[in-house]
Amino acid sequence: MSVVLVVNSGSSSFKYQLLEPEDGRVLASGLVERIGESVGAAKHKVYFGTPAGEAVTATDATYTLELPIPDHTTGFRVMLDAFAQWGPSLEEFPPMAVGHRVVHGGARFFQPTLITNLVEINIDELSVLAPLHNPGALQGVRAAKAAFPDLAHVAVFDTAFHQTLPPAAYTYAIDKDLAETHRIRRYGFHGTSHKYVSRTAAEFLGRPLEDLKQIVFHLGNGASAAAIEGGRSVETSMGLTPLQGLVMGTRSGDIDPAVLFHLARRARMSIDDLDDLLNKGSGVLGLAGVTDMRDLEERVAGGDEDATLALEVYLHRLRAYAGSYIAHLGGVDVIVFTAGVGENSPLVREGALSTLGFLGVKLDPQRNEERRRDVRVISADDSAVTVLVVPTNEELEIARQALEVVAAL
Image 1 (spheres, rainbow, N blue to C red):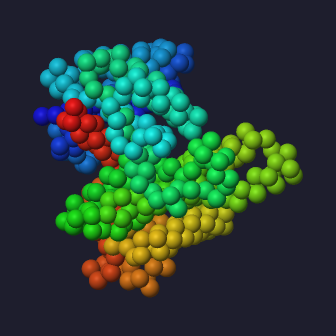
Image 2: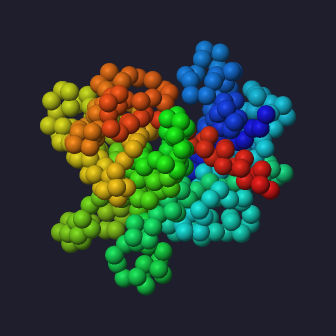
Image 3: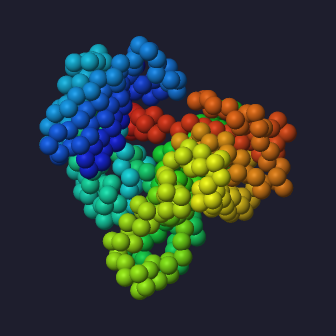
């Protein structure tokens, strides 16, 4: 049995999972947070036989503790102590590799990559493109290497899947020399999820991935869409940063750049003010005062006008991207919804597809309303396009990619 430890590290916290890549079974997971504060916190969950994708059973156990965690290296010692004290034993289930989620790989990394000193330097250098994410990931990498010095450490980049975008899709229409100097182009994000979901959809349907034209909507607090042809990303909504594209929980998505000039001149807003506005104070929050789609839908049901408009704007953007991607692909075979909102909101799924009847897209109302955690068809039997809900599993995808790298060594 092959086991991989997957780490998702930020500047003040990291999440981890110990899992079997072959069947997706999770053995343990945890969260170490408030790193660098006076009192940190750790949570360690042990799964006793819970099959992949199913709800946690009563026999599963969660352990928590609070203690000072001054840095990531200490955090990894806390994690190792948790495995030793509460299980499963890392001697009984030794990891074959450690897979690391890294947000930005720029144009340099287009596949899972064994982390060498040179790769660390590149991740650090690419922090200019992801200052909120890459530095934390690098801290996690270095702490994990200290904790597991004899294991292969593999970086899986959120941007890697979108490195197949054609130049016409990733090029912005600005001065080309300036763009090249400062590496300004569309990179796209959520690539690990888009890759996992599109492949899982093909496997579920029993059809060759190479034959399918897919549109995947990854809809969570952060949201993105991707047009995937033959398993390759050919268009995606996020750009140089995760700000571009769809309306999100706190991010504006697409906006006329001149709005920023206008606010700078008329509202005297600084660059930092504008950054905070578009990333933290916009989207559904800016329009309706909430970030959770469940809260928004509850307010819509109660007749709240701001919430109703926010939902309409959200759905309008989804339909705009759906239409654009159908044109780019020259048709579509499968439309997939994933992530928190995509997997759990029948209202959003229905609204996103409500104008695609002319293409023969037809939802089955009863299937769309079902609340399940498995891959499922929600389109009608006579729909010309198959519509699926596919729960994403980025940790499993990272584990599988890490194991592929190790197998090739």
